[in-house]
Image (tube, rainbow, N blue to C red; front, side, top):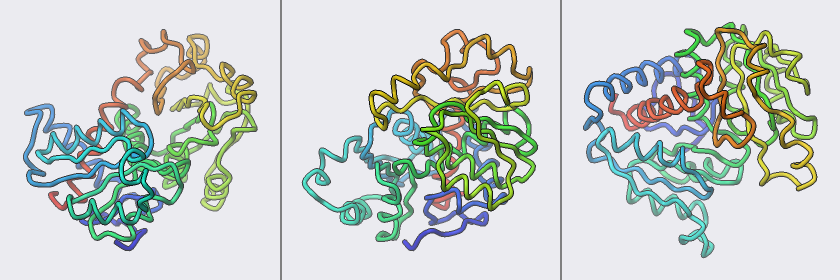
Length: 317
């Protein structure tokens, strides 16, 4: 289908490719629907809302959480899935184009969810098919579904999505969810964002320009102590070794770590989030702190929001 389409609360048949598609009205619709999904699972663990619907899950990059989350989402709603975890070992490895792959799986399914290492790749697939396509991550571009459930988590934990100070902490240059969540936060101009990272792996320049154009208050620095006392959400990232030289990785690794000492400087009413997987950037003994939500509500909310998106896009709500 032709992309990118704005979503003004009307989701049926729409692709989910970028946070740029969403308005506050659309966000509220997703959150209300996610609340319904949460209630469904709390009462009966299963629904037949998407009975007869088939989702093709096409992943060209390794994934466990996102891949598993989408499978759980459609199966809990009564749908079924064609799960292909390593597209490089499929016809794509023989040279089949993204466009041809999309057309083939369009014949098998009602919706395609895909992850690919190239920015813009998911849009290419969406442009040649009539069924909806959901972006589960395109390189260092965007990760809209994760950003949506991260904001949903913030709302659940803090009771609001405005007048909040979010600090992204760690390696930021290769984090698509940093790009997407920053755009979401920019929908409300009362929000403040801090980007704390080494200069060589700092914020994506396109996001920097986007925030400036939106007149959003943001700060870039290398030392978390400059902002930690005022932070409502500390969003931690791992150092992505796969994108860095060995020398740069060794220089950065271990320098941006959340430990109990840092927790003492945080607000009592604040939260710690992480896109996962967590390696060594959050000390294990931080997990027991009530502000640490990355292995608790943040993970669960990913399921509710993805269930909501599937139901909305497939026209069942």
